[in-house]
Image (cartoon, rainbow over all chains, first blue to last red; front, side, top):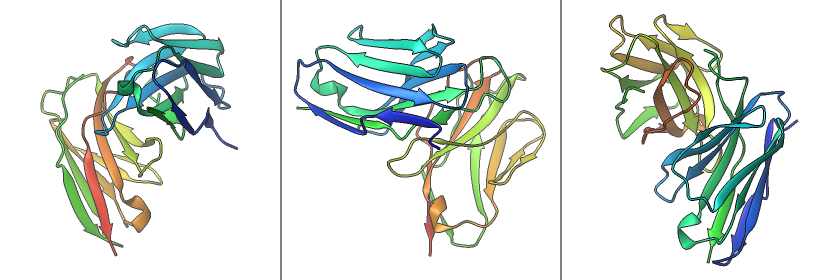
Length: 115
Length: 110
């Protein structure tokens, strides 16, 4: 069973389009995250949700909008895609917030290419 | 969260112990040391974490110095599948945010 899954695995699209990436976790975790890994391999957090509530929102353009329909899902919608959005996007989840053993479990990533 | 410093790259012979150092000289008393790794093209994978005491699990051991200013991740019998980038991260208790640095690229040599 896949713990954290993402769809699609690859996404190629043109500038100006709107696209969504979906994430689901079957671990029963309360907290979910989106990370972006750019071409230089730097991995940075974008958002975090706990029980459908936004708790972390880094300085991400408002073209990026996370949506959490329930605590097992955290989707990422991106409007008006730009070349600089090309990256690998990772979803992750953890047991809760503020707990010592809150190791995060990551999905396989979605490679987004904007042309 | 405290800044961590790691060597850019290391090699280790297959079957030997891989010792990955991490410096976190400004770590505070309630910051944990977490280790993750990222195998090529995959999502990061949790390895181990600790606060003061040494820790061991099925993947690795974590040795934290008494003054907590540095730590070492030990993979006891490295295999080719351990080739990855290893990240040492200082995390404040109660902070969900992981801040990844550049990590150490460990290459296991056959």
